[in-house]
Image (cartoon, rainbow, N blue to C red; front, side, top):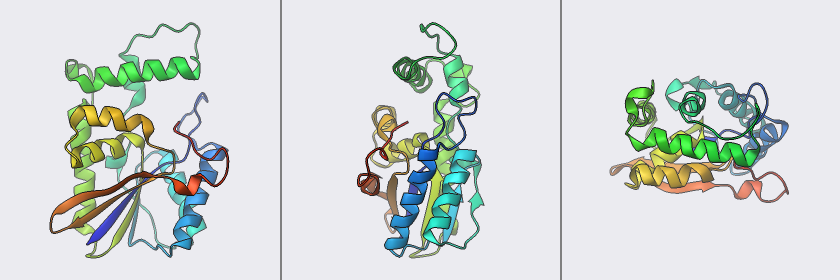
Length: 219
């Protein structure tokens, strides 16, 4: 069997003008994961990341720390959903230009529920079912070229990880909704590919972040 390790990017820059930048903590989370992979002797056959900057920089930081020399491949199929577009279609009630973390979380959850609910699919450039098809296609492209007994490390985001996990356990839209908020930054979800197809082995593993206070984050 071969394996696919789905890595969520490190913490991005919430509240900054450009969210798509790793925070200092996010870069450290990526390095810690790289150290963990090196200690395990893990050297992947393929390293893939989406087109987003936070995904690319996480892949670069963990690869450098792990001592990998392979060239990363870019596949935009692993990108996160367009949260700006999803938020724009959900009215908010907070005052001012910038919500608090709690206000943002409530707004984001309501916007995501609207996006995934299906009643407003025609209002989105990428409705939830199309998002799922995009991510599934990215996984199919990867497994089609992954060597037998090979390993691929994919740096992606919480949404694609939650969607694939929910699909693999037949959790549907409700499963995605429960899983997406708890995907830890720089966590690892493991899939194996064999005679039974692609199977989920573990979800959201993050023990490597628990040894040092402050490394564990969800946003």
